[in-house]
Amino acid sequence: MTGAVDATAELVERAAAHLMPTYGVPRAAFLRGQGTVLFDAEDQPWLDFLSGLAVTSLGHAHPAVTEAVARQAATLVHTSNLFLTEPAVLLAERLAEVTGWPDAKVFLAQCGATANEAAIKLARRHGKAQHPDKVRVVALEGSFHGRTLATLEATGQPAKHGPFAPLAGFVDHVPHDDPEALTAAVTDLTCAVLVEVVQGEGGVRPVPAEVLAAARAACDLHGALLLVDEVQTGMGRTGPWFAFQGTDVVPDVVTVAKALANGLPIGACIARGAAAEVFKPGDHATTFGGNPVTCAAAIAVIDTIRDEGLLDQAATRSRRLVAGLEGLAGSAPLAAGVRGRGLLLGLELDAPVAAEVEVACRDRHLVVNAVAPDVLRLAPPLTVTREEIDTAVAVIAEALAAVATHPTDR
Ligand SMILES: Cc1ncc(COP(=O)(O)O)c(C=O)c1O
Image (cartoon, rainbow, N blue to C red):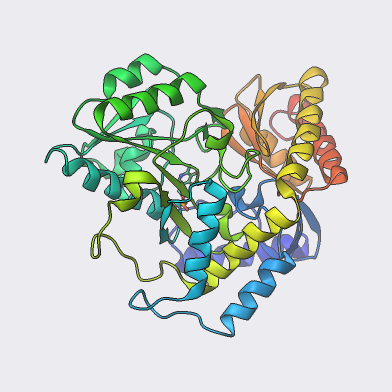
């Protein structure tokens, strides 16, 4: 065994003693990161084409984020929400700018699930003002919205519900690609329709424009709010700041988390129009919401993306990566096609071997993941270089060939 494997094995053993095993057996352990590269215990580089599950969009250890965090940590870390701190206000102002909603109001949470939890509570409060039973939510099959009880219930993956049933029963799920089914599911007792524009955990599956349009129309007809979960797709991951900005549909509420602070835990629920006026003092709260350090990191992320033109750069890089992956689909075994938007991409395989391809990539120090049995997810940082893209495509080609040739021992 190499030293890195020894060090990882030792850490895995210690973790097994005292960490709850909710994440399965870890795939590797890393000591540090720089840009698109992670370094293991032997200081060996790995190419990170997953960005910590679409989180470190500026790459690891981005100097602007490091500097903002260090400065804020040395200044003021926490006051509670009994008091104001400027980073929370500044971040809310920035989020109003990037949504393009001058009337936006923001609730700052800690992660994606808590941002969605806020959105669902907001929609219920809005619905109940119209009718005491207007609390139902329509969501899509295959969606992922989080693991708290309400967001788990909204998540359209019944296997994840099983161990925790019975759930409250307030969510109706419809197929992700059936506008008529969605229209039929929304009633006067629906307070919200909750959708992703591209289902990330659901297999990098774009939701058809007709479904988004049907959701908007049904919400308008029944006085419900359209909630768009941009936890995975926000902050330039699919091209624009938010994926909805690449569609004809404008939601009432958008949630964002993951990449917002490049790895520090944060989430935001952003509302406009009447939805922005729903919450009153005492309606919702969380001790760490608006934490100055995480907010400072998020402001640095937004400013860096804007000042360095990273949305445009990421679009160019996306085209190169898509071309590389499409090339594989024409030439390499198992590769069948490419889906997704921007730098949230899925390589479709013609057999359910994505987990094996993931391992074969990992053996070659490339981090990607099997997001469905036949889909490999790629989500490199927006800062990824051309050379890194070409290397990753070459590694995937090798991994596909290895899996195709030796399905069991790679
Ligand atoms: C679309 C979407 N919503 C919500 C979540 C939950 O976010 P968190 O894990 O930060 O609670 C995720 C996480 O993968 C996600 O992809």
